[in-house]
Length: 319
Ligand code: ZN
Image (cartoon, rainbow, N blue to C red; front, side, top):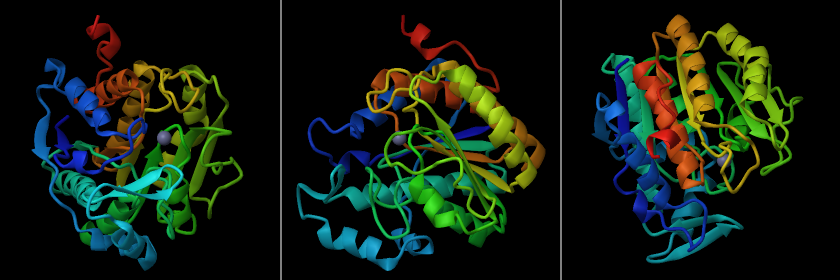
């Protein structure tokens, strides 16, 4: 496969308080993993700035108004218990969006088969009417709407394997039969949504996993519930909310996934993309808060996107 890696260069401007789980160190750890010689064939570009006025495609105007009003001239301003906006946060968010939009452009134009965007802050908790849960705007949702507008990609699937439910993405698309949303997540856990009974207009699949669930049970759930529904939806494009906080070391959750689970899941998504949408998969980083776990997961995920093979576990490469 030809895989485009889009890296954000201004993420450090999105400051979070000392000790906050969502921090720039995450990007550095993932970038280091992606510099491995096994991934030398990646096409690499800096993510360009995106246009945050596009947020109005999925958000009510007050979301951007609030962010602009509260954004401090320097330092940090708190939006909720764990969400902060700094002077440069909107620049970082714009580049995260620009990265996903460039990834979509590249796969639609055939410059790449698939793409991965290494950026922060994450987005999948941002609902139509509010920023929350480390997320300022719902980047993947905005990108999905823009893909429909620009490229006529009518049917968009969003697969969210972050350990937290993407309440924001579900909130935005739950009434839209042209956007499929599937999430696997630990439950109970923040944000509390994502029960299996939440099915939208038949376009939403939620797989709730108990604390302690390892990759074998995750694989069964995807095979039974998510892959058949995704295949049946016949997407024109698959977007991935790629969080790596289901990894066994993550401090914010208690699932037991390992690198090879991310490789397996990615490969299965690629199989469906091969059949349904000319391989088009654009993935973006959401969560993942243990630096080693994040590096392992990202390495496995992007390695599979590029090579189609699981490869050695990143952890073992480091030993
Ligand atoms: Zn998460």
